[in-house]
Length: 194
Image (cartoon, rainbow, N blue to C red; front, side):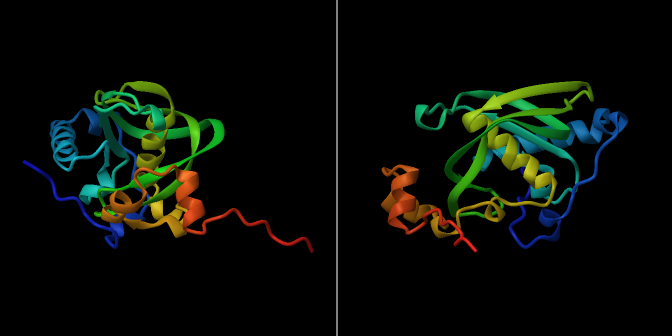
């Protein structure tokens, strides 16, 4: 059974999700929810899905990425479950790339993210895990953790790069992020000295 992915404007997407106890995590309903989220994420298709995106205000997300791309430091990521995650930036070097979201269907924008992060969380059994990630995987973890705090990528995006995914494919997919930003007039502006 596939779950409905809620779209921007749903209050749950702008709320801080609640943490779960180990007993809740290990419960049969939560284990079923994990499997339904996996199926829904794969069907979408997506590389991550947070509980708020299916209308559940819970500190839970799942990730899985089956593709590789040298340009974005994208590597295969096996299916993983994160409950009550705490994200720590371990490499603040800015990394910019286009991001989309299953809760903002049909759009994308350039989003600056930290190059490296660590996430401390509980796994599907309620046991502690710590995952370090760089590049694309770090981007996924930041994006999904944001969902649990009521933040969407549009809150972090470079607004002049916001576009439909159709137009991204039509005009910009062969351009670098820097070329796209420059062509769209998205330049870093320094505040005038006072």
